[in-house]
Length: 273
Image 1 (spheres, helix red, strand yellow):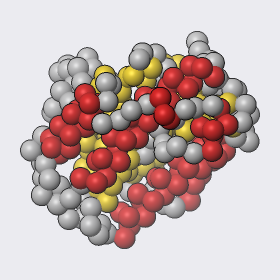
Image 2 (cartoon, rainbow, N blue to C red):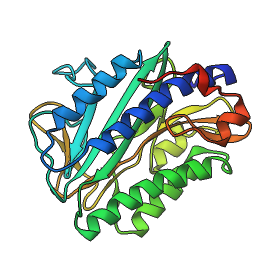
Image 3 (cartoon, rainbow, N blue to C red):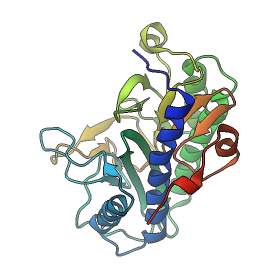
């Protein structure tokens, strides 16, 4: 059951989205060789506290409850990496995914950050993944069904010689981090038959392409959370929380822009540490 949100609810979600965007901007300013991934996580946790935001990831149930406010996945790690003592190195790519709740509403986003000068094919992987997310947001404004967008995302990735991860997909988001619908970055017969959905005003989804340099297959590590590529090649991940409005797609986890003014969002009501 997909819940469509009112303009007022979407503007409430924008508050959480701005906190997430600010958190990821903080991360971008920090990432450098020698930094431990747990230091990034602590900085985001502190920022959420100062912003009056509740982290969404920490304590998520599993065989082991997730222990951090961010997922930090380096190089061959696809998603759900646990921050720790791993030191970031020159040439790494670092994917950071985080989310928070503000006054009962959620925001969720991710970014992949190159450290120094990764290999050219790795930089291309990061850029193509970012462009795939941008393409999806653009196409939402002129497509009727999500399958049209997802098919275009898959074609774009594969045209560049990379593979779309199919083990994980995006999701609806609102009062909870994970709501209906499931939001794949690819199309198959099962989705076309049972999972496709209309792109109509009030829809709010987290779009998150995960793209691998090699095989699309992943495997779970012994920590019960971290997913890595089956062939050990790098992976990139970008994500935004996006609302459909009468004016088109509205990125809730990005910087302030024209859509905020169109929809009447007042940034002066929101204070960040």
